[in-house]
Length: 304
Image (cartoon, rainbow, N blue to C red):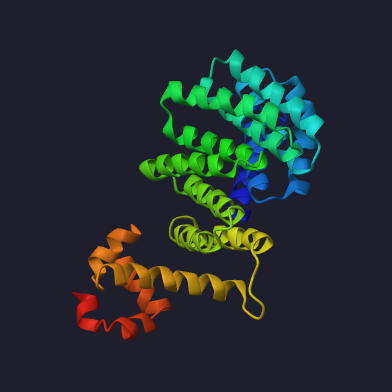
């Protein structure tokens, strides 16, 4: 994130004498997005304040739509929901004027997520259902998966936990089809939360183990730390046993069950776990070498 912001700052220096230049404004809006992703609301608010007046003078509806969407997300983060409502309303208004349905659906979905955090599930349902309908009409499975994830969180807030699980399963299926790893990780996190709410603690741990493996492999260590921090806030950890050890124990159990089910056949176990055989053998060798001894798997069989 920091490197991306440095690059944006260097690019904006070219236009620092013209604060109204569309490229300068676009760079600032992108910077605002990076800061929000990093959850750096203080710096994001400063960036927004710096371009507040230039944006009032801006006539580019695309830039205005993007700016108000980012501002809406920022004000949700700092619990200023009235300001968030105003900015999301403007973002949706400009997106409709542009006849950009994908933007309309995106902004409606973001607005719905903010409404969930506010506890306004009635309006959140209206907004997210409209977003889902737009993405279904566009046949945009990526954004549809995101909107379904939001819908599941609305249902979770309404204590419709079983329904939320069905919805997030549909979201995960779409993410997997498109290999949208960032969205898939978020959806797996929501599913983990839902499983824990249902009292299915072991399933929740298994899901979290899958999430951390995906995040480490496809996104990066930053994402792993983000999810681990969030997980530690909602899970009961056994006395005297750290979070990492408990997750590791459940991951070990998952691998053992899969291998036992297929009589220690590495290829079949990998298929069951939906990972490559190479990934499975590497994970066991690095993290759980004791499994080989427990199941009597020789190194020659492992390499075969």
